[in-house]
Length: 303
Image 1 (cartoon, rainbow, N blue to C red):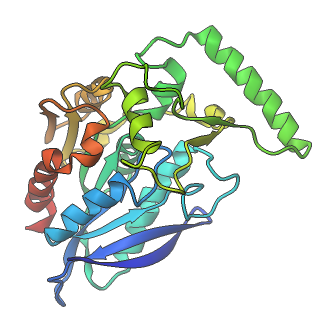
Image 2 (cartoon, helix red, strand yellow; image 1 turned 180 degrees about the vertical axis):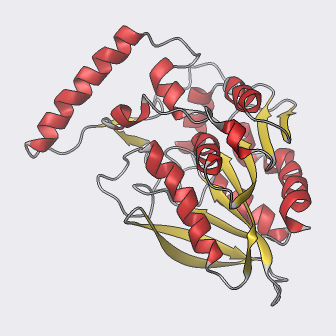
Image 3 (spheres, rainbow, N blue to C red; image 1 turned 30 degrees about the horizontal axis):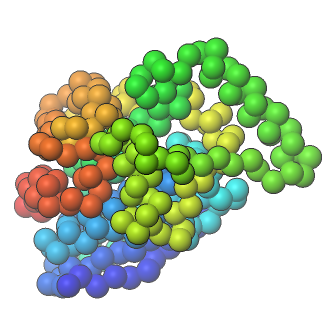
């Protein structure tokens, strides 16, 4: 079994906490490493940790970490969702791995899950150190909060009203009030359609299936102001000629995000659709997608 080291590294002045998994057959030879970034509202011990463990068992060093403002990492107010910070955490993770004697800095890959599928894409567009880029159930949080889901379900007038409310919340916070927060996922989810992000996400994060005490289904309301002008995939073409893999479930209501990511990327690229799976089912059905990630990273950074 891989061993786990608790590690910290700086990201834009914020201390980030991660788990570095060391393969049990690690030798003095420098090895390939994969950064694994968790979904929005998630922490490193959930699905990101599961995929990090799977890849470490295949001989990769892996680094799953709590994003700034999340989990054990620092950053105030906690539960702020800052997309530029989230993307930058991945660049900072590459900084950290590049300092390790055991890791070959020319063989660093990255895997982003859900919102982090967008964040790792954004990070890789301007960081050639990320030699192979993969996403699982990828989503663009900018579009999600700007346009709603399905895309277009939030009108511009609705968005402007939401932004007015955020502006008022900022004034209240400046006067000493605590930051306003919202639930990210609906607490009353059981009557929602199954195989949807909102139903299945709540079922994962709010039940023993995926629940974790540091994953609190909370987002600071003024995160909206940071998210609405953000675009995960606009410059995906810059990742080429590094390989890009988007994995998504056949039933996922977020599949269109992965399709857009692939459309905007250049070769080599691949959209791999997993039959019978939804957005969230792939969080713990790791065998369904895990084999594909092992093949991808073995081909592109382990050789």
